[in-house]
Image (cartoon, rainbow, N blue to C red):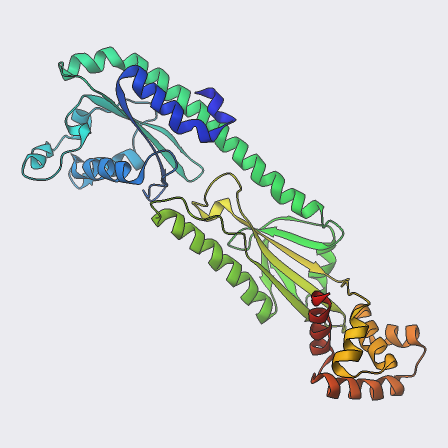
Length: 373
């Protein structure tokens, strides 16, 4: 059982071996806080049948047994069918409705975990024709040992997954530590940021921060963040509703080219950071990486495309290239050794030939051409 902590894929085989050895039926349910089954350890259909049966039992007036297990049950306490059916509603199952095995065989169900947005229930049915009470008393010590072993292993798995997720996110930040990079959750709360972010926030033309929440100041940036969040929400809903393993779809990424307040160009990249080890079951398992890059790489070979595709002269192509790479007309004038009036004349011809109307549109065109190379 403990070996599953390093090999979560072996869970189904391990539980199958325990069932065979003990002649039990085991249901291990991972649920979200609102009671949705994730399908991680138990087949969706099997879990749905058990949940329907538990929901039909009345532990007290106005509350069914499934709700009780989710919200009030004591951890590691072995609840039997009799404990959960104070209203004695199970006779309803003898009138044409399919009765679950939990209503036939002796068995116990217990809460293993109610932390980090996960609720874990373990149900074991002791397949026997003997007296229910005697069988439960005989099997109870073994059930309690198994419950604690599974709980410990699950705790290790979740700790490993959390650390792997944290390391993956931090690696993504470290790779861009010289840039302004934010790691935020789906509510835009800032989890980690690089030192360069302080200067970016103080400039106040792309992002601001309000009570540790990242606030986009540009509509296009806000739309990019909303798009990535919508993709995360879609993955969560798909994972909750799917009865089969969801396809391996890569995370989405949005890339924007912006003109800053001082006419510098910057690229804003927004992409989701998703867990690698399991399907996305909750928004809290995902993060969003936001990067603002001031230095834009552009292939020098784009000059050849400008001349061949748009009939730009050598000087016009150079002006377009350096204006895009530096993001500053003044810096471009120094590099080319030309006057501002000459540059304006060249720019007017460049805009006409390329059907662009601004520095930003021209830069987007050049980066698009560079991507072809």
